[in-house]
Amino acid sequence: MRGAGESNSNLFDQHHGALFPLFEAFRSQSGPDEEDYRWLMHRARPALRVSEETPDSDRWQLVDTLESNALALYEFTPLTD
Image 1: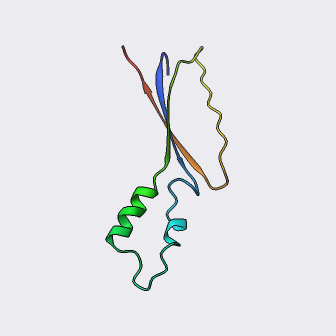
Image 2: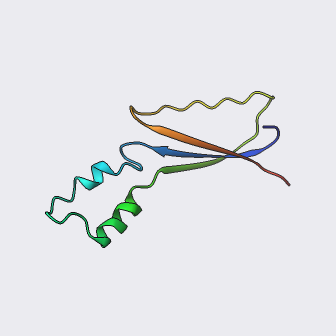
């Protein structure tokens, strides 16, 4: 990627985007109802981080630290004037 660009990072881990820990809160015989499912979908979202980057050379490097069993998805979009 040459020139300025936008970097989006979506982090999925036990605190962001994990459904199973949230499902453990529902211990009724019937399970979650429609309102509960809406709440689950609202809470189970990945953490989003957006930044603008301008590499100094042809080489671009990103370093990130993740917890065990975490996944990060990156999207790079060139910015045009």
